[in-house]
Image 1: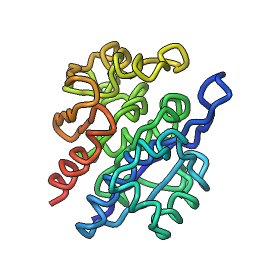
Image 2: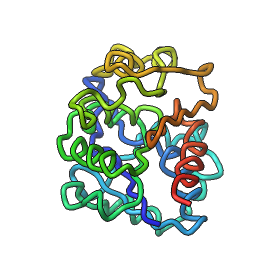
Image 3: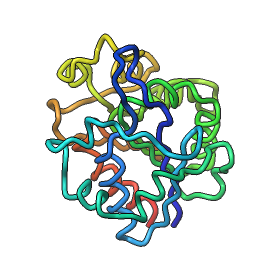
Amino acid sequence: MNVLFVLTSHDKLGDTGNKTGFWVEEFAAPYYTLVDKGVTITVATPKGGKAPIDPTSASADAQTEDTERFDRDEEAQKLINNTVKLDTLKAEDFDAVFYPGGHGPLWDLSEDKTSKALIEAFNKQEKTIAFVCHAPAALKNVKNENGEPLVKGKKVTGFTNTEEEAVQLTKVVPFLVEDMLKENGGTYSKAADWEVHVVKDGNLITGQNPASSNKVAELLYETLK
């Protein structure tokens, strides 16, 4: 079983002067959930090379068993430091695709034409497409086969407006994930802030926040069996 992980290449948090990137836990938890079951994982970014880690996600209070395992895992770190360039890959070569979050995807993956085409190809091939937290940003311009937004009429979730307010980045981000999913016609649902909430609709799986990343990966694995 081959699963493609797509990470952001974007490392600037708007005009704040602070850094962003992908959220370590949202990579690590799904990575180990799948790797431990024998799944082969390829990691790609729009630019290739080293994927930027959001420094906040590497701070002491954001650590979990999975992030601590990642910190000790040279093989996993090698994947992060040497990601494949997204435009060299084809959906045909993978069984599913998974997008971890972090704030980075709001800037690059939301507008990236290669990513958009790739998600559309996975969807056309009826393969699982999964996203967690801010990663549903990558669905912003993705269309279904009728040329309508892919999320239209589908049950979805993603980082909530109130969670964005809690981290005080509402005025920094280019758009709010919850608002975008609703504007694109998605049937959006959420749990309380920071609670686990994952929604599956057909081949589309979305998770609300970092706490939901493990469950997204478990559901993704169920679809591969």
